[in-house]
Image (cartoon, rainbow, N blue to C red):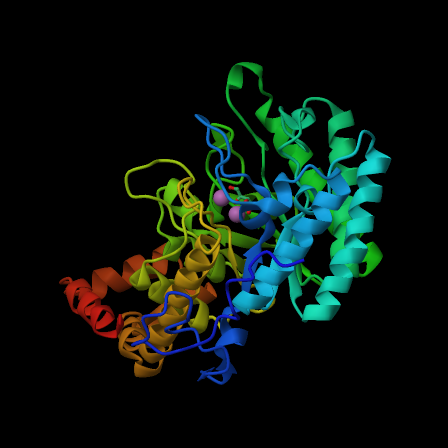
Length: 438
Ligand code: XLS
Ligand code: NI
Ligand code: NI
């Protein structure tokens, strides 16, 4: 069964190549800062946008060319055809990883037991496809937002029976992720938020969410899953106020419930911009607080205030984000997962290749630029110099707790220092970045 027979394996052909089905920058084996590009970027294809969703929007039906999903075959046969399409596509793209929700890969049954049976049966087929192709699992996740039972949330639902159902669902998917050698497990907040406070007990919902996440961590340890647990910040959509608003809100939540050592963050570019932040800020904040985990690579639209999930095309943004990640020592167990989808009019079979090739090349350029910027030390040198006062003397004593308001006041009174501002050099530094963005 072949769905992409017209496309050969995508290869690196260099920046001058005009073949739209070739990489111009992503050269998997090229060494960058001691690792191959493949190891530095750890690309993953997401199952939901790429193979499951039909391409509809709130005004109209699906348009995408998805022969594996549209056939009249019974649901498990459709799931198997979708699996064949997915692994053929990912192998031809040469992406080393994939990500999935339970409901992307297997149909929901009429009972919980039947849904679980479907998923575990597809899990065996997935394991065989992984074995055959060498494609690995970056992360698995449970869809706790699509079914009407989750309309008022999963963990934060006013009905504890819904919490229990969600727990049972996550238990199954966490165990399957473990069996498939998944390197992370993701929990995006789905419908964990609210639309109006008139019907919402915000404190209770927060405590419910904290308890749910603690249960996930407990079960992870019980089954010996060594991967990283990730939560995914998003400020709004589908609810008006999502609880996992941004990196900072997630950090506060994890600390409050004693989970900061158990979870890291899966940061999505478009969610960052919806929160009024830059992608770079969200990644940098997570790194600064020791909770950076992985990335959902996409982009929003400068005018549209919703999660448009477009493929990344901004080389400067990619450069700045990769600079932060490289400074922090790399992605660790995380990766760049393309949580991105085609536009509704992109109905040709090869469009899925164009989207991913563009995204992979954008991030590969970002990686090369960021590595050069890092090696030049042009930014880090400025920053180090700017804070040098904190490396010893007064700065060091303040942070060590060896100074008080009284001692500081005595010091200022005695020395009456001249504290004229020094240039922050923003324009100079922007020009440095511009020189490295190629
Ligand atoms: C939705 C989220 C979702 C998660 C996985 O906005 O980005 O796709 O990444 O559940
Ligand atoms: Ni996402
Ligand atoms: Ni999203």
